[in-house]
Length: 94
Image (tube, rainbow, N blue to C red):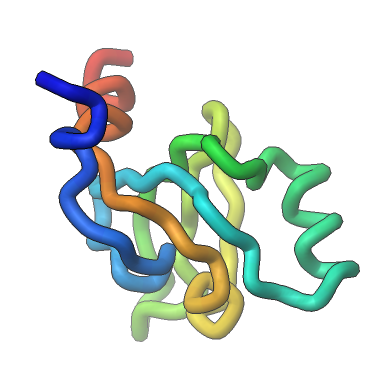
């Protein structure tokens, strides 16, 4: 399968359902916030998996490189991803 066929949609982290993964394409956040997230591993090209949510749905836990981070929905709406079946398969294969 061509790599481009593996991407199913363009969305934000807030749009991913639990268990779905995406490849980070853009951090549309203030410089300080974007820098801090990049220091934590939220780098363009990284595979991010939506894990679980707190009661009420906010914040939500995301997994990056095997580490889990909780982000508020408002922040997740500014992190753009391409939904990927490749990332999901890689996570399930662990």
